[in-house]
Image 1 (cartoon, rainbow, N blue to C red):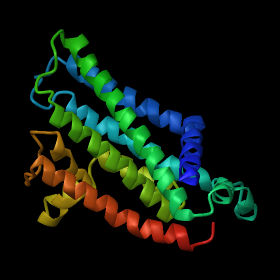
Image 2 (image 1 turned 135 degrees about the vertical axis):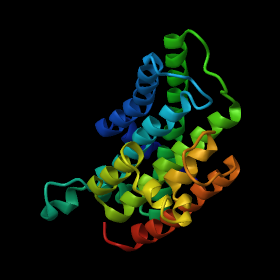
Image 3 (image 1 turned 120 degrees about the vertical axis):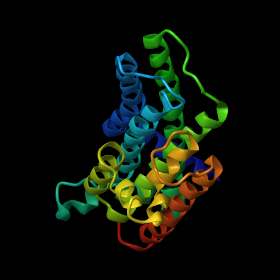
Length: 247
């Protein structure tokens, strides 16, 4: 048990001192709040049941993705293949030889930080709308706030798991951020096949959004189960690969 706590403490310290992780925290809090404030200032703003939550879903997801990716990609940053021994992953596995423990500690550290950032983002976003509009955000309930928390937590873990598989942060970060902030490929696929409705970025927002522009409608609990299933499906092979391949 001492080894587990030591590994968790080390992972938490690494995250909080990593410049790219600090950037992810700033993005996760300030981006949704900034987007919500800009939207609330618009003369075409109509409020609505998803005011603030839409911005949290998109801006918060970008911060969660960056956090999950850099938590792993920073371990493999080197000056070249010949300097593999200088990678941070070598020191990590020397300190924590049990690879499952090391991975679990990283997941826990990222998860706790993602939840904290999501909570701060929610406060900042709803406060921004309130200050701009002079009225509290409607339809803010504990269930919807919890849905945002679960969605951003699972998004961070998905980004982490994909990066464990690739050992490079550029591709997963670019693809996942583009998918949540620009034209979503999975959303376009959902117009072609009903199976695409079960992609995490399509199903997941149903946990907290009430006016989702997709052809499918999921209950919040069902959407949460879809997200958890995706995390498990990607994390399982990532754990196997992490334990078996060379550092």
